Amino acid sequence: MPIYPNTDDLESLHCRVAALEGAVAESKINLQAAIDDAPSLIFIRDRDGRYVASNKEFARLHGLKPKDVEGKTPYDFCPTDVADEFIAADRRVMDSGTSNTWKEEITYKDGAVWTVLATKFPVPGPGGEIVGVGVVSTGVTDLDHQSGTSEQLAGGFVHRFNHLLAAVIGNLYLLSGSSGR
Image (cartoon, rainbow, N blue to C red; front, side, top):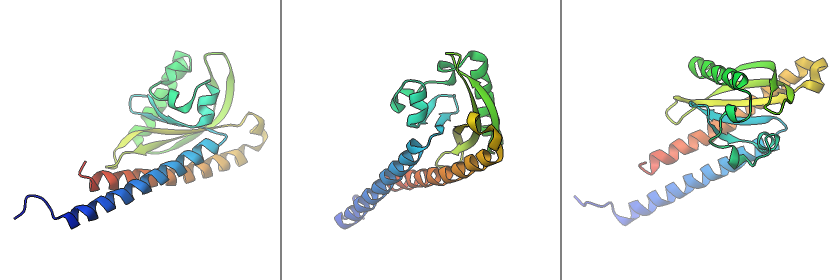
């Protein structure tokens, strides 16, 4: 029995991995385009409360580029009591495995207050375990008189966002299984 597979098998495996890597790259580009074009604040935090991804609007609000948000926590942007509430709400979503939507006022360190319709949802890892929380916060200060409409709008966006996220995670899972990682 040969130690190494024949070159045809290696070639086939290489082509399959390359195709999956292309699919993952395309999924990432589509997902990033969708979240960057949204007027809402969109981000994902890991189980430790660190931002692992954000859209341009979230970064712009904080005077940063999206890549500069990574690794920060709510304590970098909000007063301690507000950050504590965010982290506690994250835990509730991750522990329950269910999404929550509510309207709230957020006070930032600079004193700015923003009324938002916020949706938090669990983010699954490749094996289905919850690895973090995703958040979509849509400013509704000007839409208070249309609260039903803004809630429907945010809910629809979150639903589409979850489908894109599931596609990216699925492709990453396929890629990691195919390459033996």
